[in-house]
Image (cartoon, rainbow, N blue to C red; front, side, top):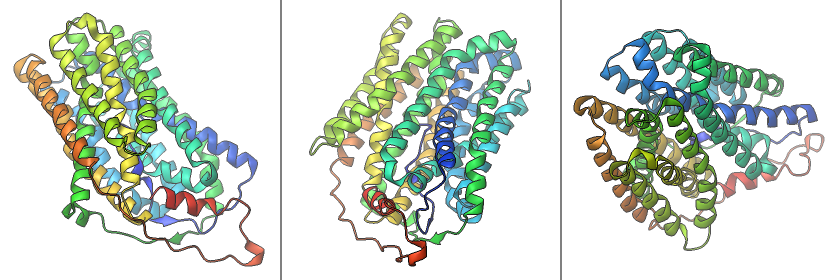
Amino acid sequence: MASSTAASALPQTAPPAVVRAPRGVVIAGVVAIVLIGLNLRAGITGAAALLHDLQAVLGYGPLIAAIIPSIPTLCFAVAGAATSWLTRILGLEKAILLSLVLLAAGLLVRGIPSTGMLMAGTVVGMSGLAICNVAMPSFIRVHFAHRTSLMTALYTVTMTTGATVVAVLIVPVAQQLGSPSAGVGAIGFLALGACLGFLPIALHAHRNAPAVKAGRVSPWPLLRTRAGVLITLGFTVQALLAYAVLSWFPYMLVTLGLTASEGGLMFGLMQLVSVPAGMVLVAIGSRPRMQRTAFYLATVTMAVGVLSMLVLPVSWAPLTAVLLGFGLGIFPLVMVMISRSGRTTAETTALSTVAQSAGYLLATLGPFGMGLLHSATDSWTLPLILLLAVALGQIAVGHLLTALPKVPRRPEPQPAEPAPAERQPAGASALVSAREGQS
């Protein structure tokens, strides 16, 4: 959702030509994608599984308890919007390395048993996570232009795998370490590994640094168009539902009677189901005239999952986890729609930027509102009723989204023909094809 995360990752600069990297750098790139993918939800799901214990040990009040799960979406909105500027200043690879340093530092700081350090570390870490979320798909397109689909699939699978494994193991790890703060801090070592894994890529890029400016489209005027409004609304609703569920699902299960370990296990099950669900929904939605069907499957299942939390006893938590996990599979479907909405790559990037920045900002109301309402009513009934209303609204938004007309693509300018001594290797033209195919 976390990211995820992700289609706005195209920076406003593009490489001048694809230069075949040494085999060692290519292998390092694949390893880096795996290590980074493992981190992009782990910091969020690990904290979510320990929120109940963290509040009990650190003693912070209901307002702080509501703010902490809201920090990731706020960081995604603010830091994510600044990513294109950062990549223009530093370059894509060095911006990603900086993001990983911020992520590791923030997660490690959360291991200090203090409410202030928990919040400060979350802000720093999630800001790094936001930059990495936005920049990584561009990294894949630039360095693996001829294997974009394969590397994107690897990235997506490892992202959810990391979230699932951390959600299941974080409570036992925290118990072994004797502190929930130590548990959330331990996730920082995983991010530190990603920093070290990405370092060879950043060093190689530093020695091959020139970049060519690409066309730019201002994102914010797109909110005056019907397509811009609907896509932003669709992204907002799915992000609000996703982060409300990701932030509070294990906490809800614990307050309803499950142990922390059982809540983490159900949380991991939900994450696990979201992986094949996303693949199935994208496969269905990619077929002619089946996109609306895919949206209906995801949105209706999410609504049923929220309803099951309202009416079924906590012993039915596995069913609820499966339903919610399938509903979370809508994220890649929304990303596919965004990637196909622009006439050029620059327009798609602008649309994705405004959808994610505005969407994540508004989606903060999900985890924050859920926490405040639970604290005010000492019950999950009202928060879940309102969440169900949002889930039902998502069905209507999905219906309108799938009615958007297809946008004809404009041919994009081709890069200048290189001199004979600098001629591109075979397969370099795939970069242009990948760029056009995702616009």
